Image (cartoon, rainbow, N blue to C red; front, top):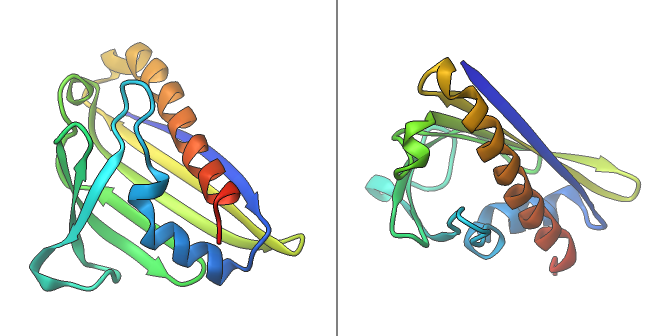
Length: 153
Protein backbone atom coordinates (compact mmCIF):
# COMPACT_ATOMS: atom_id res chain seq x y z
CA UNK A 1 0.00 0.00 0.00
CA UNK A 2 1.24 3.48 -0.87
CA UNK A 3 0.56 6.91 0.57
CA UNK A 4 1.62 10.18 -1.09
CA UNK A 5 1.95 13.79 -0.04
CA UNK A 6 2.85 16.92 -1.98
CA UNK A 7 4.23 20.38 -1.25
CA UNK A 8 4.77 23.27 -3.63
CA UNK A 9 6.24 26.72 -3.78
CA UNK A 10 6.84 29.48 -6.31
CA UNK A 11 10.37 30.93 -6.42
CA UNK A 12 11.02 34.18 -8.30
CA UNK A 13 14.06 32.80 -10.15
CA UNK A 14 14.72 30.79 -13.30
CA UNK A 15 14.27 27.00 -13.26
CA UNK A 16 18.04 26.59 -13.75
CA UNK A 17 18.85 28.71 -10.70
CA UNK A 18 16.22 27.04 -8.50
CA UNK A 19 17.15 23.52 -9.63
CA UNK A 20 20.85 24.08 -8.96
CA UNK A 21 20.26 25.37 -5.42
CA UNK A 22 17.68 22.67 -4.62
CA UNK A 23 19.99 19.84 -5.69
CA UNK A 24 23.24 21.30 -4.35
CA UNK A 25 21.92 22.64 -1.03
CA UNK A 26 19.73 19.79 0.26
CA UNK A 27 21.37 19.76 3.72
CA UNK A 28 20.70 23.50 4.15
CA UNK A 29 17.10 23.13 2.97
CA UNK A 30 16.12 19.87 4.68
CA UNK A 31 16.48 20.78 8.35
CA UNK A 32 15.12 18.99 11.41
CA UNK A 33 11.42 19.58 12.09
CA UNK A 34 9.91 18.06 15.21
CA UNK A 35 10.68 14.33 15.22
CA UNK A 36 11.76 14.39 11.57
CA UNK A 37 15.55 14.67 11.28
CA UNK A 38 17.26 16.97 8.86
CA UNK A 39 19.83 16.06 6.23
CA UNK A 40 23.33 16.49 7.63
CA UNK A 41 25.47 15.23 4.76
CA UNK A 42 25.16 13.63 1.31
CA UNK A 43 27.91 11.42 -0.07
CA UNK A 44 27.91 10.05 -3.59
CA UNK A 45 28.80 6.35 -3.56
CA UNK A 46 31.58 4.71 -5.57
CA UNK A 47 32.91 8.07 -6.72
CA UNK A 48 29.79 8.70 -8.77
CA UNK A 49 28.66 12.11 -9.91
CA UNK A 50 25.09 13.18 -9.12
CA UNK A 51 23.49 11.79 -12.30
CA UNK A 52 20.62 9.47 -13.19
CA UNK A 53 21.43 5.98 -11.91
CA UNK A 54 23.93 7.08 -9.27
CA UNK A 55 23.62 6.11 -5.62
CA UNK A 56 24.23 8.25 -2.59
CA UNK A 57 24.35 7.95 1.18
CA UNK A 58 22.30 10.52 3.07
CA UNK A 59 23.26 10.96 6.71
CA UNK A 60 20.51 12.50 8.80
CA UNK A 61 20.90 14.72 11.87
CA UNK A 62 19.84 11.79 14.10
CA UNK A 63 22.77 9.78 12.64
CA UNK A 64 20.50 7.49 10.68
CA UNK A 65 21.52 6.76 7.09
CA UNK A 66 19.35 6.40 4.01
CA UNK A 67 20.87 5.10 0.81
CA UNK A 68 19.21 6.49 -2.29
CA UNK A 69 19.23 5.84 -6.00
CA UNK A 70 18.78 8.80 -8.31
CA UNK A 71 16.07 7.71 -10.73
CA UNK A 72 16.22 10.88 -12.81
CA UNK A 73 18.27 14.05 -12.59
CA UNK A 74 17.39 16.25 -15.53
CA UNK A 75 18.46 19.87 -15.17
CA UNK A 76 16.43 22.08 -14.81
CA UNK A 77 13.27 19.98 -14.80
CA UNK A 78 13.32 16.98 -12.46
CA UNK A 79 15.06 15.41 -9.45
CA UNK A 80 13.61 11.97 -8.71
CA UNK A 81 15.08 9.46 -6.23
CA UNK A 82 14.11 6.52 -4.02
CA UNK A 83 15.20 5.13 -0.70
CA UNK A 84 17.03 1.82 -0.92
CA UNK A 85 16.70 0.96 2.77
CA UNK A 86 14.19 1.46 5.54
CA UNK A 87 14.32 4.58 7.68
CA UNK A 88 15.26 4.54 11.37
CA UNK A 89 12.93 3.12 14.01
CA UNK A 90 10.09 3.92 14.73
CA UNK A 91 9.30 5.20 11.20
CA UNK A 92 10.57 1.85 9.89
CA UNK A 93 7.52 0.20 11.48
CA UNK A 94 5.31 2.23 9.15
CA UNK A 95 7.36 2.72 5.96
CA UNK A 96 9.39 0.23 3.89
CA UNK A 97 10.64 2.67 1.31
CA UNK A 98 9.83 5.98 -0.36
CA UNK A 99 10.25 7.84 -3.62
CA UNK A 100 10.68 11.60 -3.95
CA UNK A 101 9.99 13.59 -7.09
CA UNK A 102 10.85 17.27 -7.48
CA UNK A 103 9.39 18.94 -10.59
CA UNK A 104 10.62 22.44 -11.58
CA UNK A 105 8.27 24.33 -13.93
CA UNK A 106 8.66 27.83 -15.36
CA UNK A 107 5.66 29.89 -14.27
CA UNK A 108 4.81 33.58 -13.77
CA UNK A 109 8.34 34.83 -14.31
CA UNK A 110 9.83 32.32 -11.90
CA UNK A 111 9.71 28.63 -11.06
CA UNK A 112 7.06 26.51 -9.40
CA UNK A 113 8.56 23.60 -7.50
CA UNK A 114 6.28 20.66 -6.79
CA UNK A 115 7.73 18.00 -4.48
CA UNK A 116 5.92 14.69 -4.07
CA UNK A 117 6.84 11.91 -1.66
CA UNK A 118 5.27 8.48 -2.12
CA UNK A 119 5.71 6.08 0.78
CA UNK A 120 5.35 2.30 0.54
CA UNK A 121 3.85 1.13 3.81
CA UNK A 122 5.02 -1.97 5.66
CA UNK A 123 1.42 -3.17 5.86
CA UNK A 124 -2.03 -1.71 5.17
CA UNK A 125 -2.64 -2.01 8.92
CA UNK A 126 -0.25 0.92 9.40
CA UNK A 127 -2.36 3.27 7.29
CA UNK A 128 -3.81 5.26 10.28
CA UNK A 129 -0.35 5.83 11.78
CA UNK A 130 1.08 6.56 8.33
CA UNK A 131 -1.51 9.27 7.69
CA UNK A 132 -0.38 11.10 10.83
CA UNK A 133 3.33 10.64 10.10
CA UNK A 134 2.93 11.73 6.47
CA UNK A 135 0.98 14.85 7.51
CA UNK A 136 3.95 15.85 9.67
CA UNK A 137 6.35 14.92 6.86
CA UNK A 138 4.41 17.23 4.52
CA UNK A 139 5.03 20.16 6.91
CA UNK A 140 8.74 19.25 6.90
CA UNK A 141 8.69 19.31 3.09
CA UNK A 142 6.88 22.65 2.96
CA UNK A 143 9.33 24.24 5.38
CA UNK A 144 12.19 23.10 3.12
CA UNK A 145 10.51 24.59 0.06
CA UNK A 146 9.82 27.82 1.93
CA UNK A 147 13.57 27.98 2.76
CA UNK A 148 14.32 27.51 -0.94
CA UNK A 149 12.02 30.41 -1.79
CA UNK A 150 13.09 32.75 1.03
CA UNK A 151 16.85 32.17 1.00
CA UNK A 152 17.42 31.68 -2.69
CA UNK A 153 20.46 33.64 -3.91
